[in-house]
Image (cartoon, rainbow, N blue to C red; front, side, top):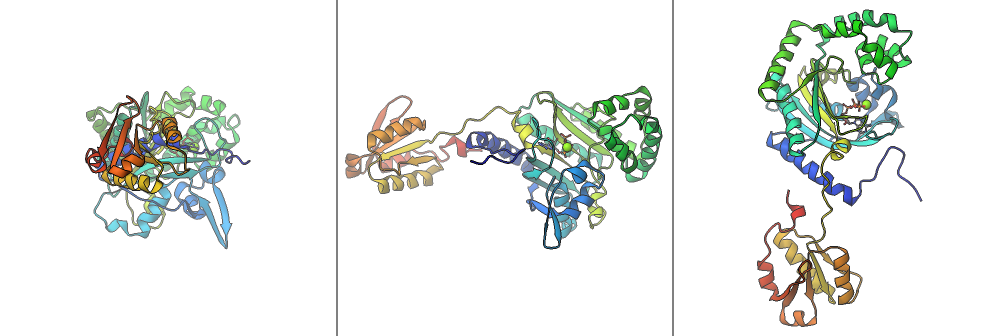
Length: 420
Ligand code: ATP
Ligand code: MG
């Protein structure tokens, strides 16, 4: 017997009833705001992620599943923004009416230490908006995530937000941060010592408790609490905060928030829930004005987010797997399958038909085990007169009707599972 690889999970039918509800809600919220789905390959060239996610990130340094085929190095996608941007450039989406609004949903792969809320294969839902550099676009993208969480009644949410500046002002900020942190290098972890050279902002994102404590020291906090970005970045961020306030979206300006990826400019945010364990981030995102050009396209501003489906699904009320609406009990399988087709044509109902040749009594026992709502008996006498006996399994009531008359009683979409 085999088990699923470490860090991966099977999603069983009883899990997927809830997943489908969450996915359908997400699609309806995103499509109502005119976002359209895009599906990109599960693997891309390794170089795409090295450039698009950033050479100094943990994702690229430690977490990628890469493999060689022929003379190519390929990688299972650890995230989907790089793939979406690659597709944006490849398909000339810069010629589409702006803004271009896309969403995706699918599995991502990261070689991380598995723990509660952290898998090696997990799923992300993401939204990306291309072609606008306005704080209004940032706010609209954040609002959609909030609307989705509200519809799903997610408890204990908090929006953390920060301004990491643009490529120009961040260079100064990095240099100043290096000066502030230099005295502590001896006490900081190996990763942070590395980050000090490659991307010091990412030191603030370190999960090591010792490093965390150092970054909480008054002299580090005093430096961070100043505004370290340029006038334009600051104006952008202030107007975004103003819009969030008028939309009544509460936020916390967290100056330690830098996010793991290199491509962010100005706005970065994270949405957490206090109902999750240690891995409390449900959604992360921000503005990434440099990425489209970095990946070979025209200079195009963009903003987006990605959320972890496993963490989100764990926060919603469970949906029960749907029992069949009808179980057709008959000793004539062709007659049963014909009736099943007529019912399905009338309204997408879930219909179960015995295919094992059990006698009628055993079929009804089976219908009970399956929790079928209604049993339709098509015995010899019913078949002779073109009727069907309809037995309500909850009340035990039953009546016999001509098949045509029964089919007329079926409301379209009579199976709640098919109704979104
Ligand atoms: P974390 O700080 O939890 O590692 P991250 O900054 O690496 O998150 P992003 O790359 O921004 O996460 O991904 C967005 C969301 O995807 C996260 O907020 C989280 O909900 C989810 N996510 C990321 N990595 C994993 C994982 N290994 N397993 C499950 N969900 C994940
Ligand atoms: Mg991570």
